[in-house]
Length: 206
Image (cartoon, rainbow, N blue to C red):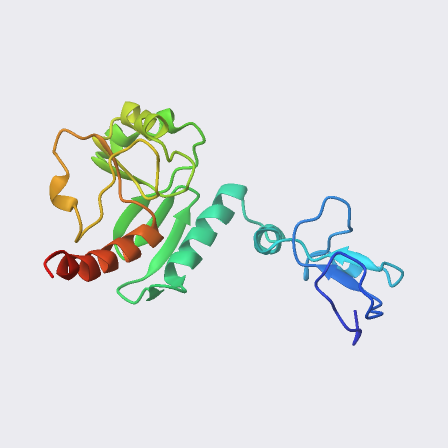
């Protein structure tokens, strides 16, 4: 788009800008992804979308000769190796073998792409503990469907309404062996609860 000024907004502004780019997925604005479809852009378009971050990521990978499953595995590998929170993985190499297999050094890791939680073959893989961290099966009944696949314990990594919730450093000793589905609470709760305990306990004895 040359040197034209860009404003990331969807509503007309009194500033007199000539072009607007929506930095998100759009239902009605023409969408363009750099290195994929930017050549289709026409100068007479005043409002366009640069799609979402995820759309850009998938579209640019899909331009190459990868299968859809392999694209997902490639993204998982990249995000694991270059995590912005936990820093880069420096212990050993992470490589993609095929659409269902990752190598962490010499160790084989199986990747599933299954929508129905009851169909995960946890028993075949001997996975006794499964962490629900995709944010879909966050109540007790939904998380428990994984137990039908053969796992013994389910840990929900989010706040929920009905599963027992435990935070390390606060109440982890209350967790009992007979509980099959528990919650590790949300990231915010884990940070705040530990801090609140340190602050509040001295006050109880003042």
